[in-house]
Length: 170
Image 1: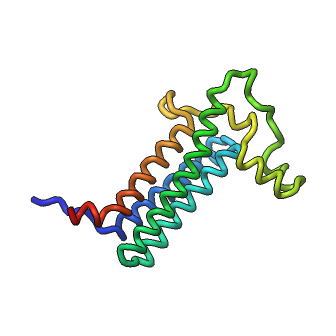
Image 2 (image 1 turned 90 degrees about the horizontal axis):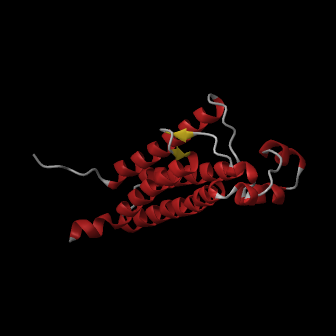
């Protein structure tokens, strides 16, 4: 019995599905578990969604090899950007209490009462709210650590798609 590896189109649909499941999980955590997201959490969500859309576009478009490689690199770059924000939040959570930045107002308050650049800074830099560990998976892993693990898996899959033809030609 031989193992057949699915084509890139199926893998891209799989990455898109993984991104959808990830977003469903964080929405469950927000709306059912009542864990309000911080600015860095929201930014990480955006990059998961962008990675998913890159892979969905690739699956629907189904371009020749060079196009699939470009889509895969675009999806992988979204994972790199998202990883930066996950690492920043992991770093904030590891700071001693006396070094944690001050907490600012919530996302909706900033959205309603401040200029866009303040909202943009809130989403990109985070504040003391981002340093709070609100939940641990299996009692060990924080939400940004799990986000980082998801980005590593998504990035690896995108890189596999990008270099798959070269690997198969060898």
